[in-house]
Image 1: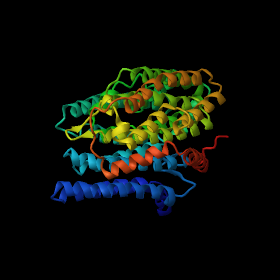
Image 2: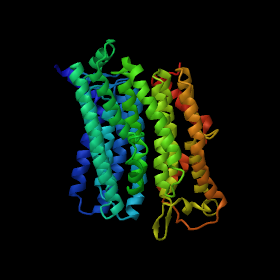
Image 3: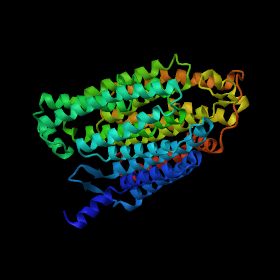
Length: 483
């Protein structure tokens, strides 16, 4: 391999290099600084800046025509670019959310922000994976960081339990993923997506290859908390520190759903008739669990867990369409969903009294009287995530409906609408508590950073004239046309 080829390959890998080298430098910086709180504050600022730099490198330094690197194991294309920028932005927001929370809870340690950076590095590798081995490396790098984050509050029994459950069930999902990859390799003789695509399109697909694909789907379904692989989600969402839960609900979900779409569309694009049935079942089951599971919840974080399960079902409907329109709808839906999630978790992070954090839905009672700004933000977030007209989340579901109908999958849009109506009950319940109940507790003023991000996200759920057309144009520019 000559120098020019090596340079070209490492240019495609530049965002990952920035994060990897930067994370190692921040680790050394944090270790050698004596005062832990100052180290955490400095590393947090630098980590957020590092993620911004990585996003700018992906957008402006890496060649726009992209390409493949490391013998085809790594790919940089419009899908990877769009996904990386989104992941880095979501990770940076997660860091900004965490700083005041960790300080208030006396958990300020610089390792937290390095783990966020390493998780973002793993996610970046996931969305650029073009080989089963690079896919597994990205998934495991992300997962190992997330396991530690879930149990970051070592003094909390709930957090320790959440981390242990996530680790044990995550190890199971990794085993499924690796076993599926080994079956695919065994029956195709290749690990590269391009070579697998040739075997999958041959017209004579072996049963072993089909089983391998099913195991890979099961492993990735766990990562997006799609039913019936959702069992970890409510407990981990509830037990993890709240900014960790907010992070789990955004960037990792986005990275895993994009990886799932890439695998199904590219190496297994010739087996649509086979995997479409599996994905249909997972989509319907996820929507059902998300719609009915949240109806009896009293903890706001557990409710958001079931909400995420349902919304991943909606996202899988877009993948099941198996069209370019479906891919575009998936990306648009996930961006708009994450806007609502950031707004909702901004309010949840603001649920602090003089005695500490509270998490019960009833604690939001009378929020419209005590904190009208937070009340409006939470109302917009719930209506947007629930898909009520005419907030941004409504358009995300509308794009998915269009994609599914275009693909001739009439029963999936019908199921989506029905389960959306059921799920609207618990979103409206939160709004009712906020606006029509008497105050139970009094929240202290949220930190300036948390309040600012929450307000921006809340406004974004309403800014239809700017957000939806802007996303459409951005997706078109990235190469995901709806036509």
